[in-house]
Image 1 (cartoon, one colour):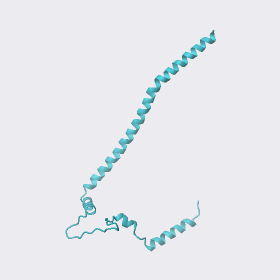
Image 2: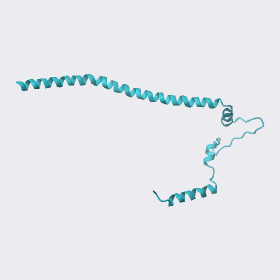
Image 3: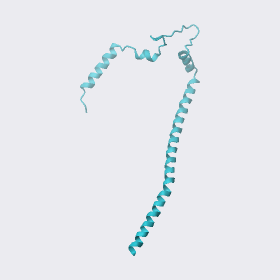
Image 4: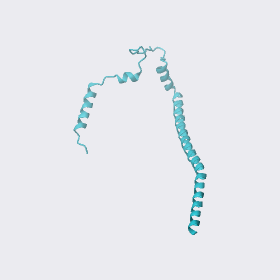
Length: 128
């Protein structure tokens, strides 16, 4: 008989523990989901703050008269009175940007010589 009583207590304990697990599973899952959402929102806020800082810097740039003049000259092809403006066109009849001309710039012979010498020194150097 005593074995049956212990078995009944164990079964009751298991049922109570299962009920607690089921009862607590939903709030714990909701809490974990909310923590993940909070972390994602904090990351969004940090990204927005960085974007605001970038835009404030851009606004400060636009408050500088020299920057405004440089932008008008490069974007709108404005020139000062007495200057002659021209636009270099590429093979596709589009204006050539300074970045593409710099990439196509031939490397002077002395830079090629210096770079080849530097590369030769790196190949012959013993590794530590």
